Length: 222
Image 1 (spheres, rainbow, N blue to C red):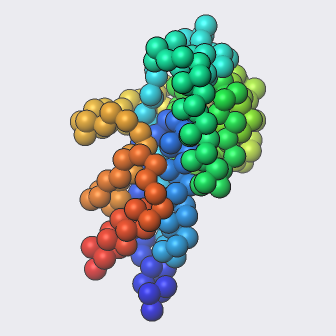
Image 2: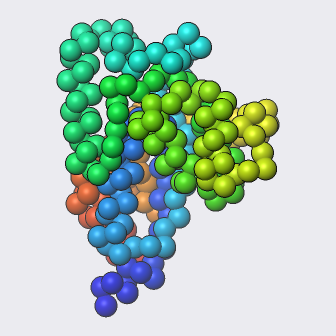
């Protein structure tokens, strides 16, 4: 009976995140494992835009993340490397492959605009996962139009180019709506997961924490 209880319930999960955020990638993996453990299949994911570093410019793009973080945070390269090793180990424990030490710096604005378009087609979650893999595993500079076009094709968006989407102002408006909502709720870091507009989890919480919140949210639907 418990399996049936979870199977027939639908849940709304809103997620604020950034493509270049390793904890967002790990958090999504933890959430997916929690969904498997609870048997919950009827879930509607809505990804919302949040830029951790909107001031990254063209000169920064393509640089190694270690050098960039060292300069930005005033840390030594060895300290940054230790930090990245810890994150990579956390990703490995979540079943993810992550080449964090060789990932590239890029401004995530274009990715967010494409995600807004993909979300309108019901492909937001799929494109988000593709962006995560291309950034953290393949170390692609996702400010590059060629890589963005490849990502769109990978999720079956074939009739429009990245440039076409980026030239349409409505997607910037959608992104700004997400950022405004984040400001209203005083969201300062990501990932942030909101379940049925009632419970929120911040950060890449352990799987068992996600399971607990999922079960509580489902119980409250009764």
